[in-house]
Image (tube, rainbow, N blue to C red; front, side, top):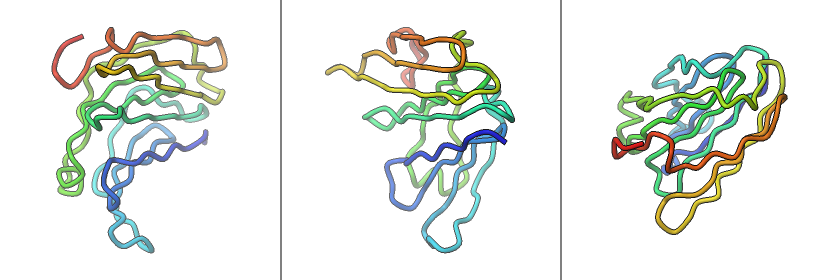
Length: 141
């Protein structure tokens, strides 16, 4: 399968893992034997493509990019994740930049008020996305 992405959740005992076609929440309280708390199909990951994810600086939004597009999720707190609650998908878009069989790169340049630009590179192009135009955890777009 394609590349796997790891993401921190704001808590030292919880880890996100994306790849294949899904997203998993891992409890890493016992670092030698992590436990899968939740798995979900994201709709944006492809079997052969890369996966990248970024967490916003306030920890409320997760950006996940893969071979089928970009998804934005609302992130519950680490304790809710450990209890089995998963990220809630707020929306997904086809950026045109990502191909299903190449790696993906992503950089989030956040401004002072939570806005900013998301730079997304894939096998087809480079996209620059205004974060204010994406769904966010407050319910606005």
